Amino acid sequence: MDIGKRLSLYLENNGYSKKMFCHIYGFSYNNFVSMLKGNSPFGLKQLNKIHEALPKLNTHWLLYGEGPIELGGEAQTFSILKEEGEMYMNKDDMMEFILLKYLENENIQKRIVKIYKDDIKKKLTEEKFKQE
Image (tube, rainbow, N blue to C red; front, side, top):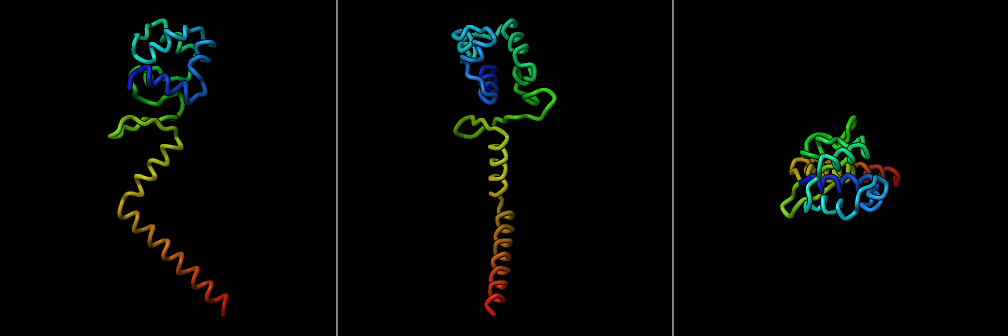
């Protein structure tokens, strides 16, 4: 993932449309979109302007894709590479992804089945006592 994709992802996850961001912070929309698409390089002037506009944004992450997305906090967004391409996730989506991966483990599945069986037995026993 390049700078433009990371910045687009950050803006989207923080509620900015590209037009709104350009309007608020004085970027030319066409030039900005061209940089986001990778058709034009980000210059030092633009990167400084982005840094001033988004002080929480970790510029190391923006440039290299390493470390937390925001300074002084935990990463808010994750990128997971899948066979069919890149998929971007927020924290809730990431937790769901981790949980689903965890549930693919056969031992975990067996433990879950045992928990359900034990729960069903308990409920059946309680129901039987209620009827007596």
